[in-house]
Image (tube, rainbow, N blue to C red; front, side):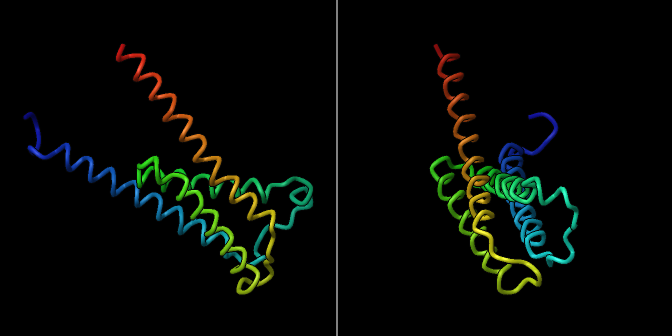
Length: 141
């Protein structure tokens, strides 16, 4: 036992778990704040209307949200449920924008982008875990 407590691996694991949950909850709060910005406070640049920047932002926000919560829970069986919950959260936020955020409106395509981001993140994680499993199986031969 060099330089530390006997339980240091356990404490490191708990620290990593707390950090994962902290990051996921922090990103959830940031996402909620961004989605609640009044419409008149958003930039009004002409080329933003031409490019689907808004949808890319939704894909990014919800992809990261799914990734962070998957990392926090760290159970592959929960990944689909996490993506589904993130998608439902995106849908709820569209209704919030429509009813309570000034100069914001409901957009079905934002829900599609939120869902795409959430499930794309889970698909990427499944691919990564599957690849790691194959590599581990090969190295065990």
